[in-house]
Length: 194
Image (cartoon, helix red, strand yellow):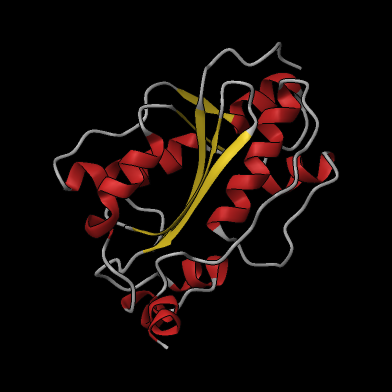
């Protein structure tokens, strides 16, 4: 275990993507903002039209079809909202190298800096704290008595699981996960218009 968290406010995030290469795009972002005591403050859950088809393997992971994603706005329309949510807090993810590359790439394409300052990877922290144990998100979460509700990866649910791992690594008990749907979904606009 690590000592108390001293990294200040942190946004724990996860991305779902069109694939795994440098040219792939983010199709969904889930993020949980925590205060300096690692207590949850807010969540963000968005989907984006990537402007390219998803690799079939990615669709098997996240379950979002190209047609579903095409109904959403592109990342550029939410870049300011995402940046404001991070607000310069530390960024944290499980396998941060991947999520940093993917989400950071979206900002770089727009000529914008990454909106987080400082970084922590729960997977690397898990490996340091529990050498020899499996460090994938599902396996580490299972060790803590947690798991996904379904077989598909959802960005917000995976961000919450990483929150639980971050808290566990710093000696804190789990917190209730506040899961909700994608907030920029076109079907929400249709419901609001009724």
